[in-house]
Length: 77
Image (cartoon, rainbow, N blue to C red; front, side, top):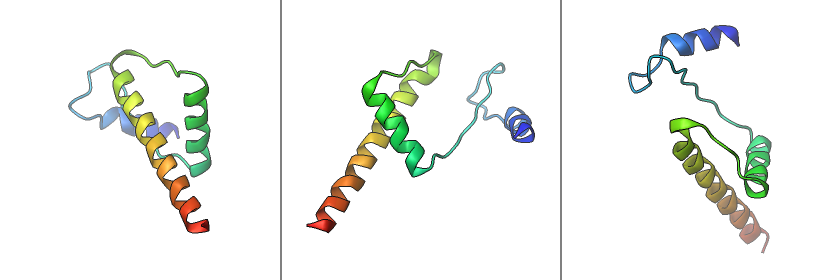
């Protein structure tokens, strides 16, 4: 994990500021459900310039999960 952090810091995209660390990750389906559940129950506070991007990401995750739920409900019918 530490090596990944170092690599991420070294290979940061040119859009990042010199004092920023840019990282990306993927979430398991259960983690995504947990994040969306928390997002709906309590507004997650974000910092600085990531806030708009994080809000968009969580909104997209919510839409995606709703679409998956609707698809599974239609398959059951």
